[in-house]
Amino acid sequence: MSDIRIGVIGGSGLYGMEGMEVREERRIQTPFGDPSDAYVIGELDGRQVAFLPRHGRGHRLLPTELNYRANIYGFKVLGVEEIVSVSAVGSLKIEYKPTDIVVPDQFFDRTRHRPDTFFGNGLVAHVSMAKPVCPRLIGSAVDAASAAGATVHRGGTYICMEGPQFSTRAESEAYRQMGADIIGMTNLQEAKLAREAEICYVSLSMVTDYDCWHETEEAVSGEAVMEVVRQNVKMSQEVVREMLKRIGEPHSRDCLCTEALKYSLITERSMIPAETLKNLDPIIGKYMK
Image (cartoon, helix red, strand yellow):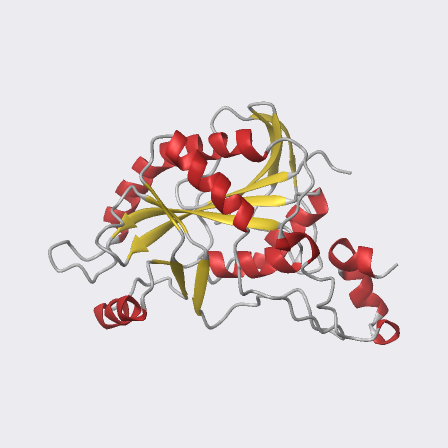
């Protein structure tokens, strides 16, 4: 069994973990293509961690261009069981201010162009996404953010839009009327694929702006967002370190994520193509013995 149980996905501005003792950088080939970058593997405060910059070092990849399947598959190959995902989001509520942290427990899909399942090619599976974020990790994330001194909000709905453009005001107002709390461009596909891979997943959503609905604030711009991102990076590093104290010790996972595929693989075993079985072995192998 791998000793790399914890994966961290770095979002905008977070391209490395301060204080991490790097052991190696590992490039992983997957049946779905290349991940965003090499996985940086090392030790942070005594915990073994695999870090991946979501957009690649230097922020080279658009949200739509990200190879979500390869990114999550690579973590699975490394033996990762828990993923902490850091990302920048816009706020759809006045009380969620820039530099606050939201730990969402729901997602709403507004994307159009993204593969978001490992299945197909002769194998059908339907996993439950009723609770798309690991309930256990939500608690750890909220406690860690509080301990780090952040203003943190537990729960809420994350609208995942296609991007790369920010919302129109009409869209932003419609999302607010729907009752959504924050808006971003990346986390939904990660959550879906992590669930299919039976990896626990949680999002540290770092608020950078009020999208464009707030009439007394300037409409969101790349320059304004990146300025708050820079302020958020230090806090996100501290929160991740606090989380490692809470989830870093080996334990028996007792959450819904661990057996998400147990009753979800629909196709008769004898009819699944050999190549599909081979490609998905890290994910489905324990059910195919």
